[in-house]
Structures are given as C-alpha cells and as structure tokens.
Amino acid sequence: MQEVTILDLKETKGRILGVDFGDTRTGLAVSDVSRFLASGIGYVSPGGIVKTADKVAEVAREQKVSAIVVGLPKNMDGSEGFRAERCREFADLLRERLADIPVAMMDERMTTMSASRYLNETNTRGQKRKGVIDTLSAQIILQNALDRLKN
Image (tube, rainbow, N blue to C red; front, side, top):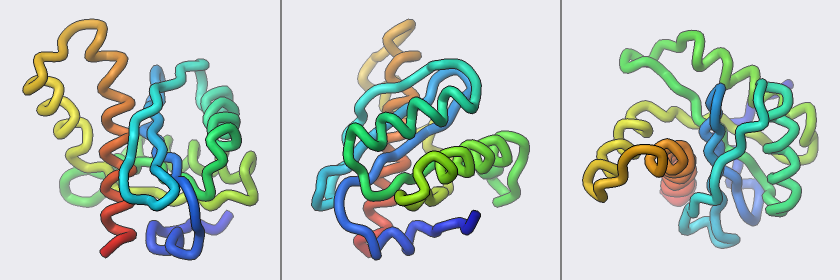
C-alpha cells in the first residue's frame, strides 16, 4: 500500500484522527473540522494489533474523519527500531480496513516525554496517569501534524 505523508493530507478536508499505538493502550485524539485544535478522546485496549486496528477503524468511522495520523516512534538519531516497525504494521492494517481514508505516519520523538512533563506539572499520578498519558500523546501527535499542515 502506498504510504501517505502529512503534507498529502492537505488534499483532504475535515476531521483528522490522531493515534498513539501501543501494545496495551492506544491513545486517540481528533481534530475539529477546521483542523485548528486536537482534542483527546480517550484510548482503546482491545488486545492485540489486529483487534486494535479493528477498533480504531470503527472509531474513525464513528468520528467521520477524513484522514488518520499514526505516531511513528523514531530513535533520537532518526533511525527506526522494532516499535516503529510495529507502528508501520498497525498503519498498514488501518489502510486495509479504511481504504477510503488516508493514513499518514508522524514522527513522534519526544511526544511521550512532553506528555510526561505536562502530567508532572499538573501533578497527575498513579492509575489516572496511566489512563491519560496515551490520550495526551495522541493529542500531541495530532496537534503537531495540524501545525505542520498549517505551515
């Protein structure tokens, strides 16, 4: 399947779904129709990459999105490891399920660190933190993509 870049999403109109794929929890965020602001909408944890792709595809249809951005965890030197490979595999599964919706990858270096720093500043701890960090990471990934589309 052909990989789409963030800039290719300029050709689409409407809401975008941001995804922070994880083996346990996958965070989700959605943009407003004008693509100005990303808002976290929670996370899914159905178990396994295939079930997660099925659930995210279902959410994409429910949210009536016109595009999806999946975080790509690169190493600090720009190389890609096992996690990046796994995220690419997940994006391919989404493309199979949503042939009419483009799926782009977005470099997510430092996203989890940014989310952790924010949660530290807001004193979010324990179980609540676990439930929020994936959603917040998805929101940051999507907001970075929206900002890149604007510029």
